[in-house]
Image (cartoon, rainbow, N blue to C red; front, side):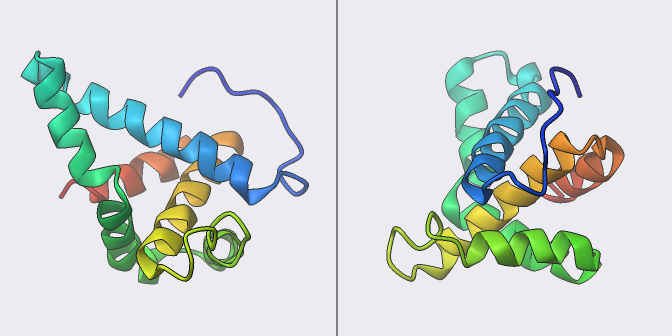
Length: 123
C-alpha cells in the first residue's frame, strides 16, 4: 500500500484507526471491482462489504484467525466511545472493530496481513 505516514500507533485513538480503515477498505474494494467499469456498479459491490452488516460478518468469519495483538485492537475499538455512539448496536461495534483493525494493519505496514484479511472478506 502507499501513502503511509508514520504515527505513534499506541497513542492513536481507535476512532482514527477506524477512520483510516474505512478509507482503506473502500479503496481496496473499488479497485478490486474496477473491471465493472461503471461507478454505480462498483459502488453496489463495495457497499455489500463496506457496510455495518458486511463488516460485522467479515469480523465473525476471521475472528478465530486473528492474533492476540489483532484481537486486542478489535476489542479496544468495539468498546470505544465511537463504537457505542449508535447505542449498543452489535453490528456497528463489530464494524468499528474491523475498521480499526484494517487501519492498524495499514498504519503499521503489515500490508500482507491486511491483504489476507481483505481478500477473505470477498470469498
